[in-house]
Length: 294
Image 1 (cartoon, rainbow, N blue to C red):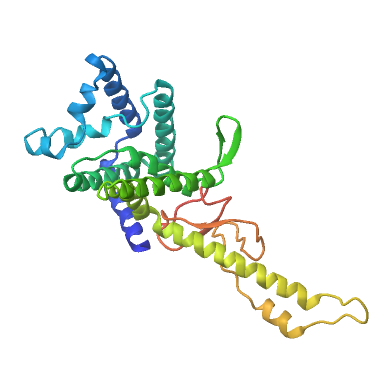
Image 2 (tube, helix red, strand yellow; image 1 turned 180 degrees about the vertical axis):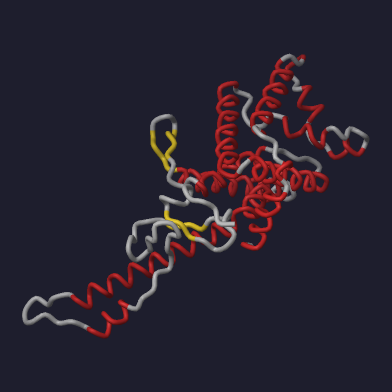
């Protein structure tokens, strides 16, 4: 998966014209326009959404614009407050990803999800951008795991914990589709997660490797302490065999900028940069503050 991620990074680097600066701004504006058109519909029927949403049978009859316009169809609650809050969430997350990645990579990421939904839509009969938009938070939480949000505007919660809540929501949606007799619709949230995994599988693997190495580091440090501990009575006993073994122990992660390791600073988080041309590790202080190696 790391090879695929590196290929995507090279593809985005070689095709800068694919980027659409401020993409989420246009997505949000399109959603607002369709929402307003729905408000002016007669008898409360959302005519604009009906004409623009993805419908396989209608597309095959010649209404090909639906392949693109379904991106701008609002999804979720019809309540104006939650609608505005949802669009702000999409804009905030999308803009943060664009600043981190650049316009071209974010555009490829978003439209890769669009293409997967279009392909799935021809098999299922419908498609929606709701789960793709929601899956952007997985990408955000992977890049900024310790950024805090105010849940219900009161409770501070880190992004990584909110991502687990988001994952639980996706899992519940899958089971709801399965248990209500719509197994094909269960593929819609799964495809949205697949889009995230295509871009972040290598980072997730590195994160698991980091936590596994951190656990091993704590064990080695405890062995080091036990080798030099003083018994309750009698002269100091030194276990030279264990001490020598610990002295030769190698670190698992080392920052390419400051040189910190998981042995010298066990509480530090280490991650690997996908933009650097190679397998370069950085501490939490420098993962977003270093010159990319090409």
